[in-house]
Image (cartoon, rainbow, N blue to C red; front, side, top):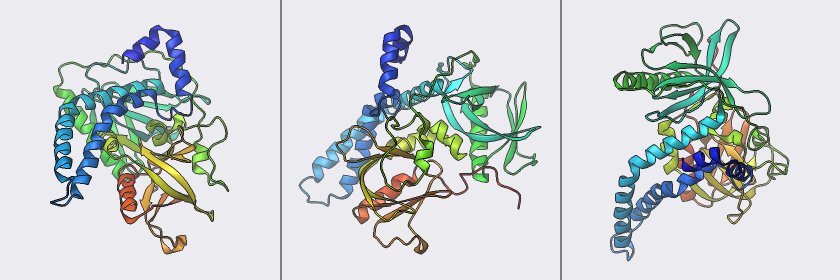
Amino acid sequence: MELEKAAKRVKKLEAVCTEFELQKVCYLPLSSFLLKPTQRLLHYRRLLGRLCGHRAPGHPDRADCRDALTVITEVTATLQHSLVRLENLQKLMELQQDLVGVESLVAPGREFIREGCLHTLTKKGLQQRMFFLFSDMLLYTSRGVSGTSCFRTRGVLPLRGMLVDASARPVPHCFTICAAQKTIVVAAGSRLEKEKWMQDLDSAIEVAKGSGTTPLELPGSVACTPPRRPSDEVHLEQEPADARGPPEGQGAPRASSTAHVCWCRSTSVSRADRSAAVENQLSGYLLRKFKNSNGWQKLWVVFTNFCLFFYKTHQDDHPLASLPLLGYRVSVPQEADGILKEHVFKLQFKSHVYFFRAESKYTFGRWMEVIESASSSPGRAGPPEEEA
């Protein structure tokens, strides 16, 4: 927060931060990196828990491992509340850069709850919109002008006095949101997505009823800035003949932020999803194969922030490419895939298919476990379904 305040006051510092975020080594927002040391403690706790499970009674390291686990558990329990608050702050600051038409998104008491793609029912039909649910309001946007990475605000609906009704059925998976000054009909991409949104909306509305004050004083005008780095969403979804990274200048994109991925994949991410992702991180060597290629390429792969980052080796300081996993399904290959190797898992989003081969049965299981925590669940991806 202090860095953000200082950057607004000192233009030279703002330029330095912007320049750093444009570098390939900065594959996440700078604010995300500032949280990593504290989040790492949660990762240590999980690692030590696993290690203790592999230390049989009588093993010389068993006592030390259990002592270390006790200490790290006490530390993380003490920090848990602060970390939740900091993660919320980081998310609000990240969204402030993505949203046009609002200012001072960071406000005391405001909490991020869910972001995702819904379609609003208008006279012109269904219109794709990006929704952001906070503890005091529901904000919806459209994609910004070409050449920018922003979402332009279309409306801000306060949660106080809001009602959500699922009885209307003009299109599949739709529900009505009635706010003080406006009523809109929205459609989710699936029944499951509809249920997630309605559950979070109902809970947030109930909490807002009992809250003493509301920080809602939003719209303002914020200039839409160019993306911090070029989007290579197309590159990520292609299957090139070789497995090299993006063309020169295309590092990991700003478009791999969860808001932009949700827009492209017609899905959503909640606060709970983000908390789980913090504790489910993994890195290691994998062999990668595209659907229509013959060979396997060995890469150092890092899974963090709902995304796979690919490095040539573990010593490289920036990724060759990245693959956001929201909306992807993870499974084992079927006979029709023609994969005859062991320890292989398959990632698929619509027609985009990737195969990854792990070193052992154990690492295969771990990759499956962490990727399942971030990839889609049944019925999550895709635009609104047609009636049968």
